[in-house]
Amino acid sequence: MVTNLLDFDLEGLVAFCEQLGEKRFRATQLFRSIHQRGISDFSLMSDLAKLLREKLAKHAVVHALPVVSMHESADGTIKWLFDVGHGDAVEAVFIPESDRGTLCVSSQAGCAVGCRFCSTGHQGFSRNLSTAEILAQLWYAEHFLRRHLGLDERVISNVVMMGMGEPLQNYDALVPALRVMLDDHGYGLSRRRVTVSTSGVVSMMDRLAADCPVALAVSLHAPCDALRDSLVPLNRKYPLTELLDACLRYLPAAPRDFVTFEYCMLDGVNDSDLHAQELIALIRNHPHKGDKRKGISCKFNLIPFNPFPASGLLRSSTERVMQFAKKLSDAGIVTTVRKTRGDDIDAACGQLAGEVKDRTRVTHRIQLQRQTMPTKATGPTHHE
Ligand code: SF4
Image (cartoon, rainbow, N blue to C red; front, top):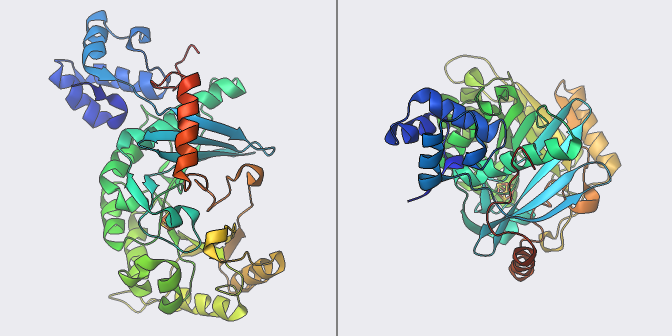
């Protein structure tokens, strides 16, 4: 059986190498060659002994995901559509800013949560991505961008698990991928710069705090259960009180001393002054278990909705968004409004995989791509 080495964190790779009779330091060298140098061809890993390279060629591959398409926006945002087989495709988006480069990564093909305002949610769920498929997005993007921008150093400084899918519903594949992102022999990202965004899978928030605490973003979108039930169906299983309790339990382990609440601004649905007041009360008055403290240390990120026909929802006006932001800020809650990036290539939040919904069209594009590109991994190697 041939093993895809993108499926392993460092400890997993050490165990794999031990099966081949190789020592830990060889696994570390191999790990660095794959993730830091972007090499997929074992014969080019010149620091490894020839015998090991031969063994690896027999038993392993570094198999990236075939790229269906790449679009670059006028603002520098780049969106890739990756083929994950059986007519499914997932997207990753690179967002450059003056002080950082952020990659938005997908964790599932489709999503089972079914949020009303999310085009991925409207597609339904296809399957979980493997660790290799999650990491392949970062591996490809990082090494492609270095070549594209002519840089030798790291380009991606931040990863947000905010692409397609609910990452905490694919926990077992997610955690090894996060470990590779954080590993100094891998991508060496700070825990503060790796964010898992969840719609509120409470049980897994507790596990993440114990296993691999990174920055946490919670998709809130409503100040009360009745409204949140209708926007984020998972709320029926984990209502707001439980979700906010889980946020409080997460904070002591978190690399930042606040939780980011994402709030998609929907015209006439959740964007009134009254909603803002309810939200402030919800956050300020939430009781701590076991003592008399109240309130949650948090920031709000207001997201202008990107309308798509099946949602039946509209974007709040800019004035409404600013008024809502002012209400929260005046109450002492740090509030930002997400800049819309990559609008011209449908890379804005909630637009991811808008085309994937149409399976026929995606399958056609994958077939076209196969006719013009090798079907094997299209990932970069250091010499390309
Ligand atoms: S917003 Fe996130 S959790 Fe909700 S349906 Fe979309 S991808 Fe799934």
